[in-house]
Image (cartoon, rainbow, N blue to C red; front, side):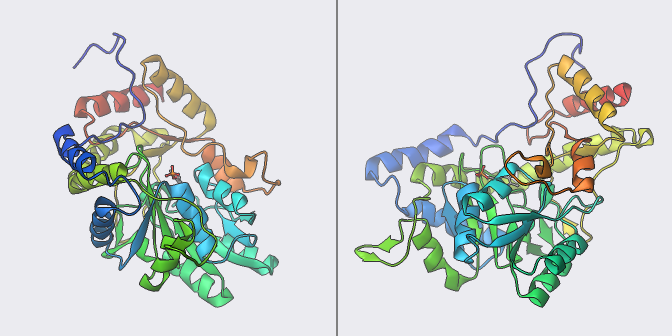
Length: 368
Ligand SMILES: *Cc1c(COP(=O)(O)O)cnc(C)c1O
């Protein structure tokens, strides 16, 4: 074991997976030769097919990032300018995409066990606000939302439901990927995510929606025929190539993360009041993050200080709860606000050495 009193290279919450550079260079050489750099080139189309197969969805469209994916999904479903319910416990992009599209954002609190939006809270919100037009739940940390209850609510109240599945690639519920639920599901392929294209994103939706999704992200026109208002959200060939290089490694990436997670699981001392989010029954989880819930904020801050002193930098995903955003009118969500004060994601990436996870677990136990 390395001497832990020595200063070390800084340990961040994650590291981007890098495929063999020669794999990537093969694509780069071909892109240089063909000069086909973007505009739905062959690598973008190949990645689209391979991802749809991996995610077991009939169709998806690729975009330059997940935030634009959220914005285009809002447009696709006609929710821009409408009232949409979402969760306060997510990355800020979930809410900012809604606000950017002129939506009125209503927050519904989370379930304290799954950390995903609480269907009962969604139902209460809809009952008290007659103009709700959509729901945007988030599969937090790759855990599955209560898709059954949320699906029933959406059908009963005739509102659209689309999922922020930014964390969800590689999670399967009874054999279905989480991208198969709702009117649409949006993925993020940012460098810090489990699967990445450096920057990138997607929307999975029924095949009959694909033409509209292509138009929305490519200026709304096809040749000289201008069909609808669009923007530019295209994924370049260089980004698609990175995705093609990373995708074959995904099962191995998830397997290694599961092994690191198992080390944390076995070593972290739960007698000190640490707990973990409860996964949806039947979920084959992707191990996108390693969140730990402390008994209180003081314990979290102390553990953070101990780890930071060793140049280890866990992240407070997600802090603060978005009910505290300065640009969202106050809506109290006590459960999310409480969890956000005491949840921390420990370092986790595919090539993380086992002994580093062992050291971090020991430091956390000692600090508790
Ligand atoms: C990363 C993330 C996004 C945004 O995706 P980008 O590709 O970075 O734009 C949206 N929602 C959640 C929950 C995320 O974690």
